[in-house]
Length: 376
Image (cartoon, rainbow, N blue to C red; front, side, top):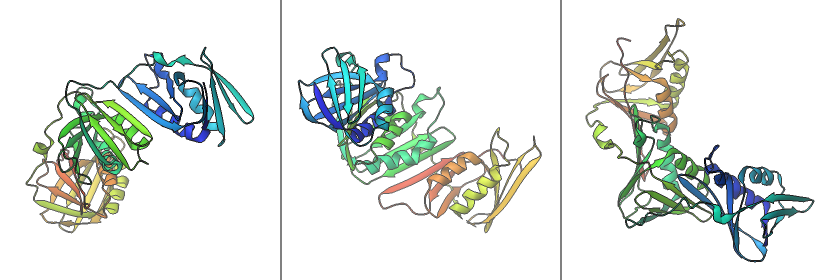
C-alpha cells in the first residue's frame, strides 16, 4: 500500500490526537497511533483506557488495498514536527515495514498489525442514545467557566469532572470541590432533549484544545459514554460514575447585601495582599463599608502583613468576612465584566459572585464558602 499526504496536515492531526495518550500505559499498544487508510482518507486514532480520539486527513496518489497499521506515536510526532511543508509518501509492505519518503529524506519504521489495536469506544446499546447538534462555542464556554472549580478529592470522584445538565432549552454546566461551585447556563442553542453526565477533566481539556476551531459538533450520549464529532475529529469518552450533588439546593436565595466593585481593582488588590497570606489557609480578611472595602492578610510565622483599600458600593452595614485568596483570584479571572457583584448574607454563609451583566445567551453564577474570621 502506498499513499501521499501533506506533512503539515498530518502533523496537525498527529499532535492533536496525541493529547489522549497517557505518559505510561499498561497496554503498550496504546503508545501507538492507529492508521486506517482507504482511497481518500487516513483516519488516525489514539486512545487511553477511557477515551478515543480520531482525526481525518485527506490523502492523494493512493495505490494498493485499504488497510490498518500502527506506528510509534512519540517518534511520529517528533518527526513530522520538524518536516517542512512537503508531500510525504508512505509505503507499507506486507511485513509492515514502513518507508516514509519526502524530497531529500527517507525514514524507516516497523509497524504493528492494526488488528491488534483495541476498540476502546464501544457504544453501549442497552439504552437508546441521545443526539444533539450545537455550536462548539457553547461547549467550550461551559468548560472555560467551570474547569477551575473541579474537585481533586479521590474520595469524591463524582466531583472530579464537569456536570452537563442538558435541557430542552439549553445546557447547564456545573463544577464544585465543596469549597467553591460554578453554575454556567448557556442557551446559545436549544438541544430539544434532556440528558446529563459528568465529563472527566482530561476529556474537557481535549475538547477545549482540539475542537476549538470547529464551528458545530454532534454530541451523541449513551448510558456510559459520549461521542463528540466535528468535521476533522471524533472524540469518545467515558463518564465519571456516580451522582452529582443537587447543585441548586446549595445556592442561597436570600443573600440580600450586595457589593459592587471594579473587577480589576479588587483582583490586583487581592493579588498584592495575597503575597502576605499564611500558605496554610490563604485567608484574606475583608471589612466591607458602604463606600469602600478594606482587605488584610498576615503570616504570623514570618511576621508579615499586607493591607489594601479600594472603593466599592455596598448596600449593607459594615461586615467582616474572610475568603481564600487563591480561590478569589480564580473567580475574578474567570468573570469578564468590568464590575463584579457579590451577594452576601452574613460572615458564616457562602458568597455569590456574579458578573455585573450576563450575556444574551448565558448566565454565570459562582459560589464561594467563607473562612472563619475572629476579628479584622
